[in-house]
Image 1: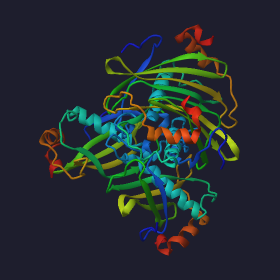
Image 2: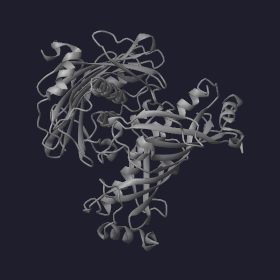
Image 3: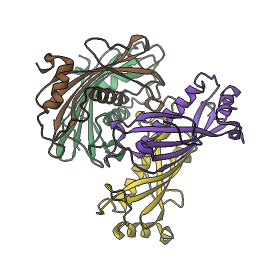
Image 4: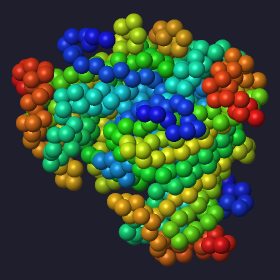
Length: 142
Length: 142
Length: 142
Length: 142
C-alpha cells in the first residue's frame, strides 16, 4: 500500500491473539511492538541495522493517540518516518492503518543515543544520519 | 511512602523479569501495566470498582516521558491522580519512582467512557465522578 | 524453507525487541505468540479461519522444550502440524528453527473446543476436521 | 492462605487488564510472569536472591495444564516448591488458585544454571542448594 504523505515508508503486520484484551480489541500498550517493528524495517531498508555505534538508542518520550480499535487477525499497515534528527536524539512519527484506510493509531517517539552503562548522550554517527537525511530530505535536520 | 504533591495516592509493585529487555532495563512498553495497576488500586480505594456503567473506559491518548531506567526486581512506587474529569472523558497523571526518590517515568492518560459495540461516548455516571471530585478537589472538574 | 518431516507447514517471523529479556535472549514466555502465529497461518492455509463454530478453542495443556536461545531480529521459522484430532480436542506440535537449521524450541499444545460461557467441550465440526485429516493424513484421527 | 501440601510456600498477585485476551480470560502465555513472581518470592524468602553465582538460570523445559480460567482483577495465589535439585538443574512445581480454592493452572519448570555466554551448565553452588534442601526436605536431592 502507498504510504500517506508525508510518510514514505510502511511495514505491514497482523494483530496476534496475544495482542488483544478483554475488551476484544488490541490492548493500548501492545501497539509499541508494532512501532518497533516498523522502525526496525525502516532501519533495515536504509541499511542502518549494520551501523556500528558506541551506544544504543533508548526511549525518551512517546505520545500516542488511539483513533479506532484493531481486532484479532486485522492486518495493520504501520507508516513511519523520521520527523527530526538532532545531535543525540531522533524523533519518529507513526500512523497505523487498518484496512480500507481506517486510521487506528498515531504516535511520536523520541529516542536518545546513550552509553548504556552511563546513560549519557552520545553523538549520532554520520553513517546513521546521512541515509535518513537523504531519504527524508534536509528539513529533518532543521 | 508518602506521594509527592499534587499526588495523594500511590501503589507499589515490583519489576518482573518478563518486563525487562535486552538492554537490561524495563522495556518502554511494559510501563503500561504498571499504570493500569495504579489506576485500578486508585479506583479500588475510592470504591469505583463496583460502579455500574453502561460502558467501559477506552484509551484515547497517552504521553509518557522516560527519566531513569528501572531494572529487574526494583520496587516501583506508582503515584496516580485524576487531573481532570469531563463529561465523557477522564485524564490521569502518573509518576513512577524507584527507591531513593529517583523519578523513573511520568505519564498522562486520557480515557473515554464508550459503548463498547458502537464506540460512542457515554456520560460518566455521578457515582463514579463524585468520589473523585471529593478526593482530588473541585478543580478536577474545571 | 522446507519444513522438517513430519512437519509439512511452516511460517516465518522475526524476534522483536519487546520479545527479549535482560539475559539478552527471547523471554521463555514470549514464544507463545510465535506458536499462535504459526497455528493461525496453518489455519489460514487450510481455510479454517472461516469455519463457523458455536465455540472457541481454549488451551488445555502445553509442553515446551528450550534448546537454543533466539536473539533480537533473528528470523524464526516455526513449523507446525496437527499430531492428533479427537472429538473435542486437537493437539499441535511445533518446532522453531533459527538460521542454519538450529533448533530453538519445540512444543506441544492441546486445545479444546468449548462453549466460552459454560466452558463445556463441544464437538469439533467436520468442516474443521476434514481439511486437517486431508492435509496431515488419516493417522491424526487414530 | 495456607498452601496445599506438598506446597509450603505461596505468593499472591492479581490479574492485570493487560493479562487478559479477547476471550475475556487470562491469555495462556501470561501465566509465566505469575510463575516468575512466585519463584522470585520463594527465592527471596529463602534468601537466595543474594547468592553470588558465575551463571544464571535459563529455562530448559516447561509443562503447563490449564484447569479453570482467571479473569481481570482476580486474586491468584501461586504456590511453588522445588521438586528436585540436581547438580546443574532445578525443577519447580506450581499450582495457581483462584478464590474459593479453585485450581486455575498447574505447571512444572526445569531451569539450568549456565554460563550465559557459552550456555554451558554450571554446578549449582551449595549456598543456593542448602537453603532449598533445608526447606523442602532431603528428598529434593534424590
